[in-house]
Image (cartoon, rainbow, N blue to C red; front, top):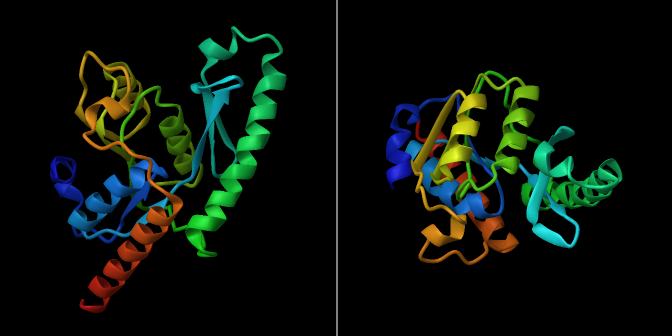
Amino acid sequence: MVLAKRLSAYAGRPDVLVLALPRGGVAVAYEVASALGAPLDVLVVRKLGLPGREEIAIGAIASGGVRVLNEELVSQLTEAHEIVDLVAAKELRELQWREAEYRDQRPFPTIEAHAIILVDDGLATGSTMKAAMRALRQRNAARVVVAVPVASPKTCMEVKREADETICVLTPEEFCAVGEWYEDFSQTSDEEVHDLLARAEKRHREMSENF
């Protein structure tokens, strides 16, 4: 896997944790974590979609009360604060539900003093990734590494300004959507997320027992 090879410097390190942005980033992160011999978990982030045109991201929220807004878009809305608060309240309920669902009552992993590799299936607007990075900064991550297979060139540059290291394998100039760069971009189900996290936990536990 090309992305994992670009992260080879982090292989076998006890201070490394791979965090996926669910749901799309989990399958990619599973392969990265497997290649690096690192534990895998999720950081739940919810996009704030423009009401009526939810595919347009006006921002994102993440664990720890982090909120990132696309100020350029928000400034064009009438009653912007009311709209953002309404959408954020709805997405916060979904975020909390998904955290409980995916983690099966497991506590959030230790972030402080760890190098965190944040993985998603790609970067379009970058709102969710920026929210994820800021959530990790709040939890005192020692290093934040963003790793994706494909990204908008503009967004990749924006993320580089906030991350300690950014790896965007492909940054095509003619970028419209992440899904264009996958042969199969079918949506990852909650069941698949459960399965991949369980398999990753079992694999890492067995590796730890052998040392």
